[in-house]
Image (tube, rainbow, N blue to C red; front, side, top):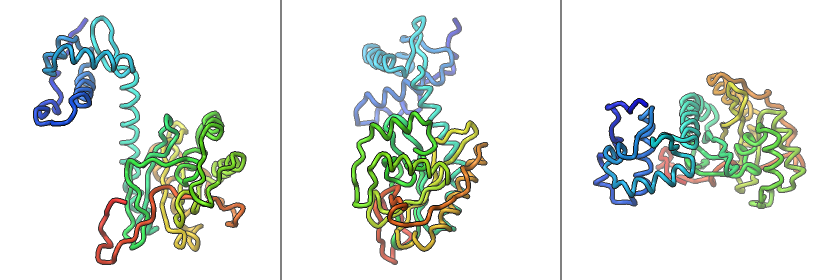
Length: 307
């Protein structure tokens, strides 16, 4: 069997490991993953020990755990990346391509709408929307979500945009098993009603919600449909309700167009053009897709502080 190329070397992070004062295990796990990613034919335990300069016993303990979890595979006394690591890499690569496609569109959407723009991905394991990019509004009162924050699918605009375009089995399981908390007086938790809302979102291609997750804040969101027809991401805006209500149709059209542009760039197609239901207490499904509204002074209007 062919040995790994002599060019395989310790990951760059290992060169600074002597200066790292935190727990060693997380760092070593990442060093192992990075090393095996560069070794197309796998590596023996001895070669890994020599390259990483990690005690053999410690390295073996790490590898046993990683093999058991599927992040590393072991065959013929050689270690290689496992299916779980491959899956993680695919997710990271997919998000990176979406970020590149969405960033200029999101910047234009923020400029045209004047509101904070969010890009989210669906975490299927936790069944949550995960924000992977945010462009903040420059208005005094603005929406201020954080990148990396997670939000429920059932009561947020961007969450519903993701939920509505999943496989029917995923939707049914989510609606049946999710603990739906009433986060505000307007939060919809009735499962039959939520199923109807999901169907409406899938038909209209855009979500407009108000006050279901955070009082006084609303969201407009639409799915990003990729080349394979799947929806893994959604784009949306967070907006104070008093600015959303008079511009509801305009903002929905802007968000739907942004989703169409990103979908097209990724080789996919947009959802149906927005067909908004009349806004009333029975049909409006208020919710918010991110963090609370934030008030800033005019002197600090352009500053982007964390929520």
